[in-house]
Image (tube, rainbow, N blue to C red):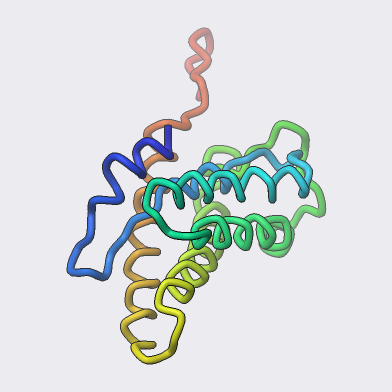
Length: 164
């Protein structure tokens, strides 16, 4: 579904040539912690490859997604006070809190966007403009990711006790 939204809607949003939101990376961000690293890399590669096929970018999204997936376990371990996560814990606002999820998704989003945009220009001629694109696109992508967490990923409400 995220791929369809990305291809049908978000790929057509280009604000001032600086902002390109990439919500599809949320799929990689919220994969369960129990996902084996090799599977995480393969899933990220194919997620990026599908986007590459639709937007005709020869492997740039695949490379950026694999880089993000490679960093994901390291970033999660670095920003967490726990060595290992309990089974069933998802990397989400609901399970780990707003600050944890914001830090986690911000670092990985900026990493993804840095690889993607640097590969796109492939030179340092307009370095300042590329940095602006990375930052602006990362901020808009993060806003969409956070909004989607609040809209679509709510914990079920306990009807009997009324507690969330």
